[in-house]
Length: 500
Image 1 (cartoon, one colour):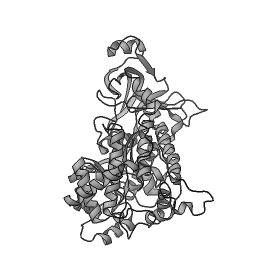
Image 2 (image 1 turned 90 degrees about the vertical axis):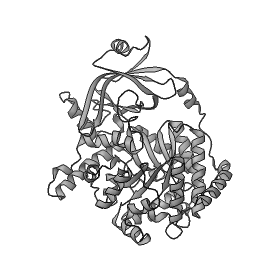
Image 3 (image 1 turned 60 degrees about the vertical axis):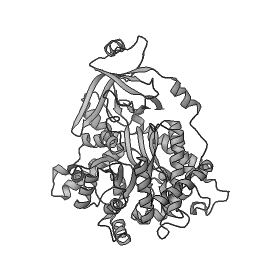
Image 4 (image 1 turned 135 degrees about the vertical axis):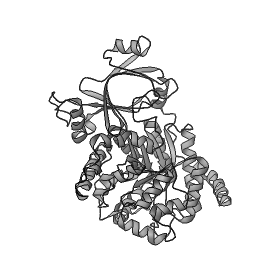
């Protein structure tokens, strides 16, 4: 297999030059943001979930330094309430910019979406049957239209298709929209197309969203439609190398945008490509994302296609794809043995409750995963999920856990309460994506990936605050009634990337 890998590596280098979309690395707004290096103080109320059962509410100030091009928390000072007191307590220079959240607002860690399909965004709210039916009816046609002029999506078009223009419109919108929801980090699936996938990475870098970008690998000639697939295992690896090269060229540090190996799911890939992709991920220390145990029909299909493996998760493990850098989406129907295997390998699960409900896939037993030591974060799974909002996903995570607890004899221990779903969308997501200790809170050394939530304006915001609620209750009201209208500003690495 090493000889095959070496051969394809050489082929990948030969096609990279022609696979690059326009390079956004030197866009004016990005250069301006990097030129504005220095320190800022953020003053107001800070709310976070440092543990699954702790809703921490603090008043104070945070000193953020961007001197190295990254917005890192240098120091914190609690129980200060004025700019002058904050400057003194933090030892900042007089004249340091102080960004203040008003009395009805608070700073909250940016949400982390552990599983989202960028090219599916136009299909939000469109469903057909269960997972496998929906893929054929909606998903594959839409995804292929972002790179293939012969896609079924263009069958009735009266004009010449421009897949790259469509990709630019879709990808720009999904990044803007998720930032407006407070999503500062996302693990994106793209398509099989190299230029369109490279474009997604370039746009994420330009707009300032922290992102893992994965070119979706689909080389199984018997399962994937003829109009949307890789031609061979070598073709899949070759194109994956091209996207890796592009992403590492535009962001060599990998601080903001990084590649992630993305075999779509076991039915879409072959034994050979899975082994080659695992070798690539291991050699380059790259993260991996794939689907697992989402739907009963899918689980049955995998068992028929890979009878030599013990389980769906076992297929990935047999090919070297189940590692401590692996994100498995869904995990609805994992057996106890599969859960134990995921935990043993240090892999994580992106819980996608809205999608699981919308496609009739079932209810993920999140408490069982957590109790077994599996890392769990949240995923919108747009467009299997009907919304690209992690806040909406958090709501659904609570609701499906309540249904599960009822089904299991009103076992309250199976519920995932509000504080814990917020933890899963921030700290849990950080651990899931390899950013534990760097994202999800307000401790010194963490990156300033933060959203400012605004409450209290009945005319323009969806959360009704009367004034007598304590802050614990206000946070709960935001979780259940809030949306992007409550997101006033968003920062990623200290850079302001969204403002209402």
